[in-house]
Image (spheres, rainbow, N blue to C red):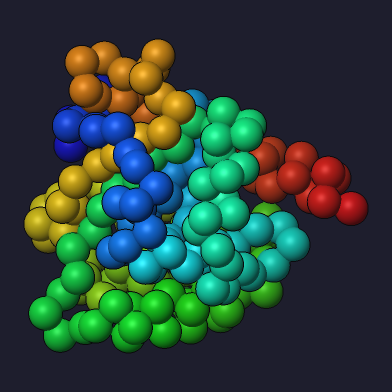
Length: 186
């Protein structure tokens, strides 16, 4: 909610439980302490994300949670409200449509934020024109009263009080992350 020059502060983060995360809609920030982190959307336990390997739709959040526990991946789950005009099934169809609209994450083509921006623009009617990073997206979602609560796994040692200071980054950092992920994906 608050921002500093080099960090975006996410307040009021609570410990997550698997039972909690398998319901509702979440913006998932994986590797939250890395520059850049990786983003996904979860709808009722189904995972949607765009990577260098392409789109993942209707993936199992349970499998990701197992990986998060095994590898101690620092993760934030930002619970998004469900607009009155949508059901959870409709939201799943929306994020699936936007995720499949991109071939993969690639320099100059798309980032993992691309389908999430499209989804938030459509579903939450949030202005996404100048949103290029998760720290641009979150204030827009707070403005629209879309963020219900925030949860974390493996972030205890990085919290100050119950807030997380997300490091800001730039497009070069994203492109470098894409390039390095592309090498390891081959």
